[in-house]
Length: 69
Image (cartoon, rainbow, N blue to C red; front, side, top):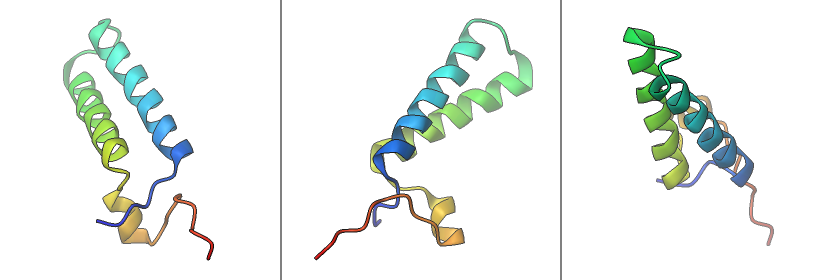
């Protein structure tokens, strides 16, 4: 897997994951919507940890800065 996520993208995903998890665990969002939010938060953390987003591959996007030679 080639990295396709930059630092800013990773930070935004981690912050979003924290917010989603906080909404669920504080009881603000419950039920099916809450479970979907927790799963989405887990996906955000996982993709941030490995710096790879499968959806970016499908659309040919990348937020990872290119190396200059």
